[in-house]
Length: 211
Image (cartoon, rainbow, N blue to C red; front, side, top):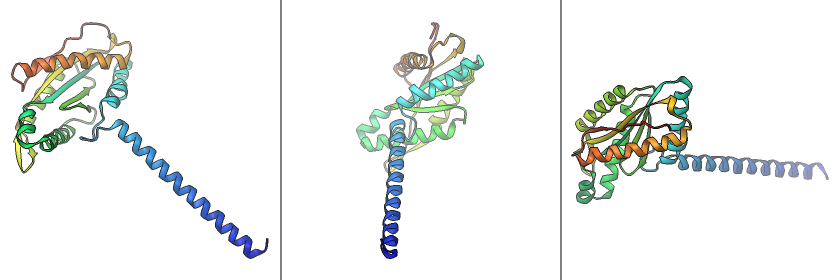
């Protein structure tokens, strides 16, 4: 192979290497995107139910167990969203849900974990926090939501929020992921009671069994 041919071959190999690098980067970005989609709710950009219940909440629970401290939980939902969907359309309802997510993200502190479970249901983990602290925090959020104007189509709307809350002694927890599932099942019942009795209120869930 003469020098000219050798130079051409080197250039061809360099081009092939560059193409391989570009393909590797494309695949890396694609994998990163899929990982993000798998753990993020597409409507709100918050951690979705799978990532929140299977990874994030259990991580906080495990931390609480290590420190032997109480850990608080909230399940909250916007009230009166059905009429918005009926009168202004589903897109307007989704806009309010996004607005509520943005509001909660800005209102919550850095150590308070937030996730969007489904529909209008948002989950929060507070650590460390006893029941009085969780109730005070929920009451503050309830008042702030009621005072906030949410963008909705070409106007603004006012909504309220209902809360199911509890605090758990980490010493009764044996398996963090199972505990997260059980706690939020109990909170779902508390949230239902809050809505059934008129909404814009806080109901406590009692956790009196080992988790």
